[in-house]
Amino acid sequence: MGTGFHSLLPAEVRRGLTLLTAAAGVLIPVTGVTAAPAAPAVPAASPAAVRLMPAPRLPAADLALTSFVDSAAKLSFVPPAGWVRGPDTSLNPQSDPADPVLEIVRYQLRVGDPTLYAQPIPITSGLVLDAKAVISIGLVREGSDLADLVVDPSVAENDAGSIPGYVTLDDETTYEGLHTLTRTYVARDTDRHLVVRAVASADDWGWLSSGIRAAVDSVRADPTGPNAPAAAPPPPPAALEPQLLAPVRDASLEIRGDILGRAAQMLGTPYVWGGNSAGRGMDCSAYVSRAWDVARYTTDSIWAVSYPIAKDDLRPGDAMNLTIGRDPEGYGHVRLFEAWANESHSAVWVYEETPPRAVHRVVAYDNRYQPIRLDGLSGAGSAALIPAPVSQPEATLVPTISRPRGTQTPERTLDPRNFFQRPATERPSTRPTPTPTRRPATPTARRSASPQPSTRSASPQPSTRSIASPVPPRVVAPSPSASPRRRD
Image 1 (cartoon, rainbow, N blue to C red):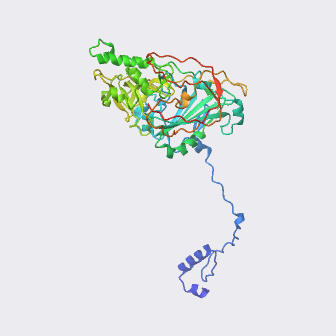
Image 2 (tube, helix red, strand yellow):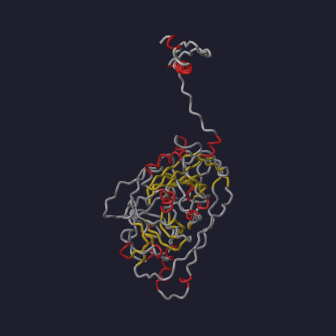
Image 3 (cartoon, one colour):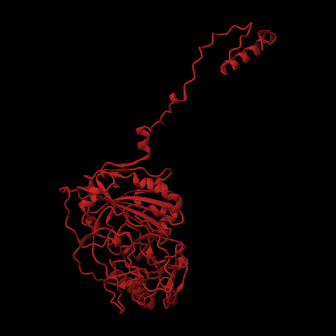
C-alpha cells in the first residue's frame, strides 16, 4: 500500500487504520491526517530477561478473617474454605465419666438442624449426619489420663515432622461408619497437651481428606500456653419418670428401672472389642446384654431376644440398634435409651459402651438405628423429657508447669489404645475378617502403656461396676499394627 491509496480513504477510516497499524508495531504514513508522533519502539526483551512476578500475598487483615485465633488458649488454625464455625453451645459435652478434653472450637461443613446444637453434644454419627464433617480442637484437662502421655526425649530430639515445640501422635480409625483422624500434640519442654479431631462419614472422607489434613496441619499453639482445668463433677443422674417410682402396676416399669440401674453400675467399664467382663472390658452389645440381664448377644444376634418398635414408642430401657448388616461400613453399634433431651426428639439420653469407656450422655438421634425392645416388656409408661444441661462457663485456663528439657513427668497407669483405637482383642467369628482400614500411627513419640488382657471371661460376671487393678506403666513406642474391624 502506498500513500496514494490512503488519500482516497475517508478521514475516519484513515484514523482507524493508523491506530490499528500502530498497535501492530507497523507505521504507515497517512497523508492528510494530523496525528501525534508515535512513541519510539521498545526493543523486545530477550527470553532470559522475562521474569514472572510472584503472586500477591494475602493481606494480614484478610488472613485473620479466614483463621481461628484464641488468645486465651494461645492457639490458632486455618479451617477449610467454606466451612462454618459450630455453635459454642454444643461444645464440651457433659458425660459420666467426664471427657478428658475441653473443646475450644468446632468447624463443620454445615449446620442443618439448629436444635441439635442448643445443648452440649458429642461428635457421633448422628451429629455428623447433620454436620457432614467436623474438626474439633481442644485442650487436655489437668488430672485426666491423657494428661499423662509422655514423650521419649531421644525420639523428640530427632523428630522432624512435629510442629515447633511439639511432638505429634496421629491415629486414624473407622468406627460406627465414621472416619476419624486424631492428632495429639505433646509439648517437648512443658506439660501442655492438645487434641485435634477430624471426623467425617467414611463415604465422604475421600473427597474431604485433603482439605481436612491441610487444616489439621495448620494448627499452631504456644507450648507455654495453658492447659484445661480439671473436669467439673458430672451432673446428677437424671430422675426417672414418676411412673417408675410410683407403686408398680405393670411389671415392665419395674424391669425398666432395673435395666437402667445395671447400666449405671457399669459406667466407666473400659471398651474392649469382643469383651464381656465388667472388670476387664466390654463392647457395646455385651454392655446392653448385661443391662438387659440376658445372655451375651451381638448387634446382629440380639434380635433373638427383642423386637423392633417405632421411634415414638421408645421407653426407658429400650435400645437403639445399628446392625452390622444395616451399617454400610459393617461395624454396628447399640445404645440403651433413657429419655429425650429436647422437645424435637433430635437429641437423646443414652447409656452406651463406646471407646474409651462406658458413658452416660446426650447424643444426636441417628435415624439409621432401629429402636428395639426386650421380649416380654410392654409399652407401658412414657419417655421422659429431660433437657440436656446447658453450656456452663469453664474455669479459667491454668498455665502449664514448665519442666527441664528432656525430663519426664510422673506417669499414671494408662492404656493409650483405649483412647485412639479399638484394642486388638479378637472374638471368635464365623465371618472372615476384612482388611483393616486403620492407618498405622505415626511413630514420632513414645507414650506410656499398660498390658491389656486378651482373654475373655467365660463365666457370668456380676452387674456391679469394678475397676481393674493398676499395672506399673512402661514407656514404649507406638506400633503400626492395625486393629480388627469391630463386630459387636
